[in-house]
Structures are given as C-alpha cells and as structure tokens.
Image 1 (spheres, rainbow, N blue to C red):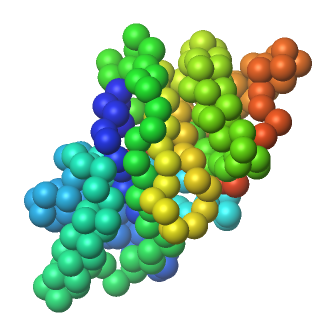
Image 2: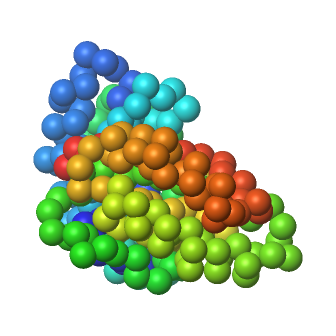
Length: 222
C-alpha cells in the first residue's frame, strides 16, 4: 500500500499446488498475471506478498489490488469476466490454486506515520475481526480508529494502517486491518506482541468486544 489508502481493495489468496513449479508460478504471477489484471483496468496498483511464517492456516501468497472505486459488485463482475477471458486465452497457470477472494471497502481515516511511503512496503500484518456485540458496533469502531491504531503506530513497529469492511456475504471477518512495515514484518509483529501489547493490555487499551477471526504475517514479493 505504501501510504496509499484507496477507496477499496481486492485480496486474492493463492497457493502453488505443485512445488516443482514454484519458481515458474511466481514468475507467471509477477510478469504476466498482475500486468494482465492491471491492463484490464481492474486496479491501479497491485502488491504481492508471501506467507512469512510456518503457518498452514494461511495461504502461501496474497495479492492486494488497490481499486479506484468502492462499487464492489461491479468490480467483482468485471474481475470474473476478465479472468474467464484469460482462461480462454490460456494465460492462467496450471499450478494456481485460488484459496479465497475478498472485496473490502475503506472505512477508516488516514492512519500514517511520517515514515509511510518513504520506501517500499516490507510486509503487512493482516487482522480480520468482528465486533461480538452488534449493539456496540459504533463503540467498537471508535476504539479501533481513535485508540487502537494510534497506539500501534505509536510503537513505531508499523508505518501505516488501513481499515476496511468486507463486502456483505463474502464470509470471514467483517473488518480488516492491515498494518504495514518498511522492514521485516515478522520482526515488527514479534516486537509489538512481546514488547508493547502487554503494556496496552495492562493499561486497559485493548477491547473486550473484538473477536479476531484471522491473523497473518506476509512479506512483500512484488
């Protein structure tokens, strides 16, 4: 994301289902597939990441497409049409395994430190979550925007954060937070969890109404 905060994003989660084709698969994704998608006008920018942990619960790779519109239904239809044409033209890779596709609309304010955008993204920490009490949804979002993310950025483990809400009916968590680092994402997450989170918890800065449905640490590939 590198400090950009688009109105919406699409995340495609994938695996390579043939280890012998891993190099060829990534070469295809970087040099052929991403340019094909962007050339079709389906995104302004795309960044690929690989799973940075020994974590079988999360896919090997994700691609984050930054969209120019938050009309998610229209974008979803156009993606399906373009991918179908690429299949017909044999421009899809045989080792591609789609794990999940998600569409996310921006909901948060602009969360950036002075370091955001000064160099390329090193990686992201992905947090999907729900509010466990629907009657306290507004309180949950105020806490996230006004307390939680400012607290995380104040640790200097991350340079920017981005909040999104899922397209209705797609499953998974309702909310998505992406925390971006200029350096190694595993080191950033480990530093936050071990050195800073205990103090935030002791200080009552965490929320009792958040249900984290997924975590993932991803290192930038493209």
